[in-house]
Length: 158
Image (cartoon, rainbow, N blue to C red; front, side, top):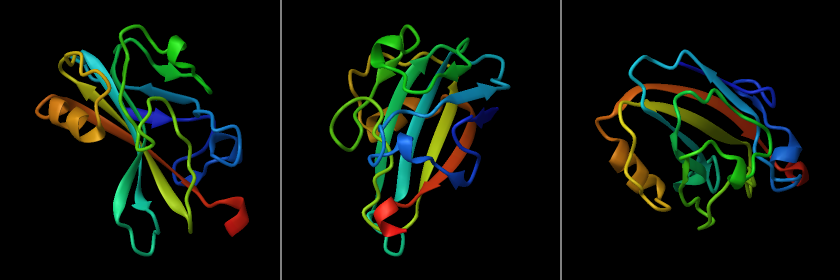
């Protein structure tokens, strides 16, 4: 399975419009080679470098989507919740809200991992799960995973 974006390249810089210093819109994401038997997809976007890459203390969750239909192969830029594929559920990010929250690192260059999982099941309605609850529900059901990592440093820290 492969995850790509027209917004940034793997290990490349995430442009400012997709961050708290810009429009804070979600990047375009596309995927291919979803394995046979996939019943749903999960997207987790997180930053393991919070708050300081020199001394990380937590992984900050930026976006959680689950039960994305396996026939879906792209999320367009700046996708609104109402335009998510039918049946897609949203989890809580670490701002305690659903939806995309872009990079906003307090210090240093952070890495943002966009992880797509192919599952052999459709998850039950989890409401607005945390990352931990979503990962627990996914356990034992992951057929494949793809990762796209981008970086960001605040303009004021450059």
